[in-house]
Every structure is written in C-alpha cells, then in structure tokens.
Length: 305
Image (cartoon, rainbow, N blue to C red; front, top):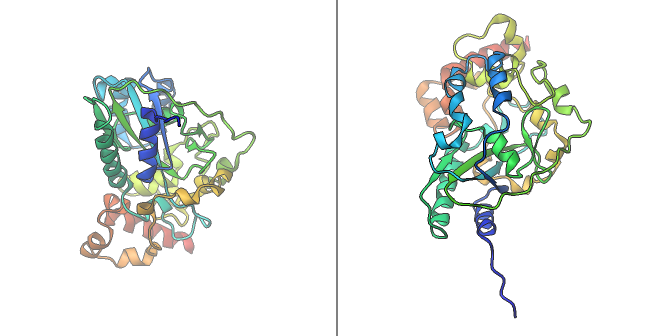
C-alpha cells in the first residue's frame, strides 16, 4: 500500500480549516502590483479623514519594510454571517460577534505555532487589518478570490462576507493559483450603494460611504451628509449583501463572529459608559466608542422622521 505525504502547504491549509478559516492561500512576497492605484486613491481625497493611511502609504511598497526577511505570505479568510435584511438593526453583521481582529489574530498565533513545529521559522509577522500591507492584493495573489466591483474580494465558495488575515514568513511556499474575475456584467453591489460611493472599478469614496461615516469619521457629521446614514448605526452591509455569491458557504461561518440581535438607536442613547463597556468590550463596537454611536443614533432617529 502506497503511503501519501502532504505538502507543507496542504498541512497549513488543513490546520487553517480546522481553526475555522474558510480559505487559506499562499503567495510570494513580490513587489506590489496595485500600489499606484492605492496612491492615486489617496491623492484623490477618497480616504476622507483617515490620515493614517497616507502616513503609512510608503510602508505598503514592500513587505521587507514590515517584516524583514519575508519571502512568502499566508493569507486566510474568516467568513462572517450573511445578512438577508442588510438594513435591519443598523449594525453590520461582522460587528455583532467578537472583535475579528482579536479572534483572527489568536487563531493565526495558533497557526504560527503549528508551522513552527513543521519548519524552521525565523520570520512570522501576523497582520490583521491594522498592519500597513495591501492585504487585498495579497488575497488576490493567494487565490482567495477576485476583486469585486465594490473593491471587496469575492470567493466562489462563500461570497464576499469575510475578513482577511496574513502571516508574513521567511519560507518558500508554493503560490496558490489565482482565481479569474467572475463578476461578469453584474453590478448589484454598485447599484445597492445608497450614496453612490462605489465607482464600479473596485474603488470607494469614503467621504460618501456609510461605513466610513459611522465608524471612522471623527467629530460631527456635516448636515448635508447626515441623510446618507439612513438607518446605519455602525457600518453598512448593502454592497456586500447584494453579491449573489453570498448564497454559498453559510456553513463556513466562523462561530466567534456570530452575534446577537443589535441594540436599537434608543438603546444606545440610554446607555451609560459603564453599561456600554460591560456589554460591548471585546467587540468591534467597543473601539468606536459610545459617544460616536450615540452621535449616529441621534442622526438615525432624525432620518426616520
């Protein structure tokens, strides 16, 4: 009887799936292909007041600046629940469970420990959203999916309702096969955006985006932009939920990212700082803070009138 041996890439993928990731892919740490597009997007002012993106733009030019010695990138996708009624509750479904930054980082630490028992590993930098890397480019190159018209990565097995994480390593891993663009003539995500923030070529103007306005925008929201929030308290699922590929892969949802029904705007306005912290510590809502959520809740109630 012949005995079959798994490649290192197959072993990493199997362990990643065991940890709850919907997909695992690999790519070499080559020069970025989309850096010029990213810089033009910044120069256009489409990043709104997310000044940190401009400050860290040059670091995205090379993974060597983020983790010296990196030769390969391991990319993972963590699926969160879909939303059949994307405006119900006003809080994006990814934000109703545990903070994905912490969940994904913890699981990637486990994956690094697993990998360290399989190979000599000197570099293992974990990145989950906050690191200055072009994570969607690495996801494309690692075969996680293709870039949708709304800029998100779309996978044929579980749609675009997922978050990404990366491990930068000094191993020579065999690159995964890239997936072809399968959006075709579909423009559902573009048409679903209530503020026209999506250009249909994978770029979003944050100045007009509900997710930016409710989560990232500091201070007061200009009166002429308040109507743009509609019922949104935190984020917006409309372009994501509109993707027809989301009908697949619900069984791949990471359990930690499943949450309870969200509070109403009135609930937020009645909360004290103490009750807010007790209820939402360890969730994405906690980082935004009660004051910003109460700002949003006031606007949402005004928009109902």
